[in-house]
Image (cartoon, rainbow, N blue to C red; front, side, top):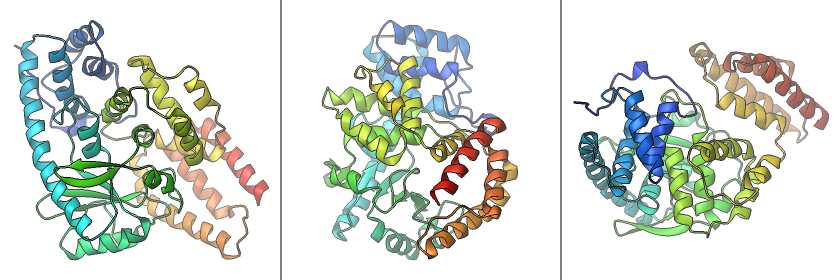
Length: 391
């Protein structure tokens, strides 16, 4: 008899961005209607070792159970999936209670908070709150309150979880920083929503269109549906050592709950403003192939037609390819040198071409991060030419 269980040895996982063929079948079983979902479930069982599932697939099992139960499927493996769904539901209820208490404290301190990712998505979009496993609470606070709040958490005994100190944090380059309370409660504190845009005005629209909701009698804010989709897709289309599939399920349920009220024009404006049309196009295009979406006619073509700068293309290539271990020891040095060069350009208020040292650092970083060197060199050359010309 087959058994359903995760593989706990993560050293055998392969990193990536896009789901494997087996994971695509599991997504179809989790999200689509009969007969596609039922056939996908059967094909998936034939393809994988069900008692040694990768973490991303294991996290989808609760949603698979709820969908196949809805379709009336009877299968011994689903009885085991039911147990995983129940465990996830119980774990999430405890987590929501803890998160609610934390948000109440922030409300008492009059700190504006916008809840991001799993906690808001599980409660507002999914069929039930046991379908979306999660590990932390992601919250956005005003950039002006970010550092003071982080320092206060450290004074209260919270630990830093990002592998570097809060004192080294750059709000103009990083969107968030992780903290863990002694009891294990983990908060990812955001000063910005997106990795791609950490400018001072980057989050104005997110705050202006935020929607109110309630978590365990605690009033909070979360992103508007258009911004939710923008966030989960742009965040999901990034290389990860242990790839996750939750962004695809998140995006599916955001659109499923929109019921025709989704403002696609605003979505396109936001994509253009934040310069993330490329990952959004690639993400939605991929989703539409494996789990067809009810997108407006011509939406993907309009998204693809948004001009993409050379530096945005370079960023996309780097973020969707693996970073070799040989790069990591020198990353801090490269980061520091790039920051110093940028600061030098700002001192007199004039743009100028990057220094020769910075160009060599950029070239080094791109060479070892990206496998296709010809492509990255072409993109890098175009970007450097545009920067030099503008200076």
